[in-house]
Length: 210
Image 1 (spheres, rainbow, N blue to C red):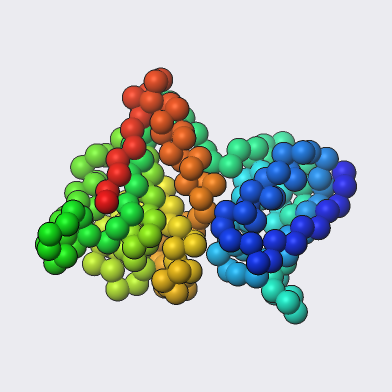
Image 2 (tube, one colour; image 1 turned 135 degrees about the vertical axis):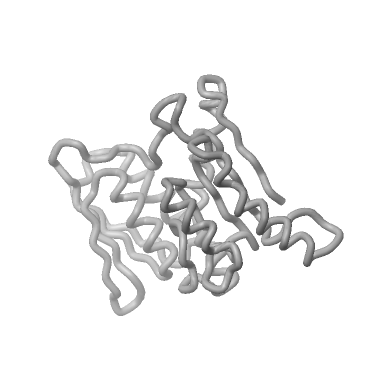
């Protein structure tokens, strides 16, 4: 298998992950070294390569970050970017949160409504599959958020929480995230695709909060 190096410095999300995916999808890559320039990209690329069956190491270098993945040859290596719902009784609903308040008209009321909404999501039980936070919604996943405890409880109960890394970087709060996986648009689109595509088989749904 070949060794390759990919320079993704200066690329905005999700281009680093997409370029890594393109190379790995081509096959015959035993070792891939990716050069990056931000922490969100490091997390995204590292997680994606691990899911594709690579043993991943990351380190700081003089002009940025370096992520190296070596192909795992033992049986059972993961080959998909995101886990699929296991069966009809598995979690099926993906909730997309793109704001830190619900509705329009009064911001204080909107913040209270969204707090109550997230605190009540546990009533979905095992139907709740994923929570996806975008734009101002990522502020709900950081320290100091009134909703943080409810999200931590959902995560501990098996709900997969995705938090947009580009959005965290935009608001300069990447280091303050306390729940969920820092993710990229490829993972988000894949999660939505799974919820929509499997709708014909499992009645899966996407709930959007804006």
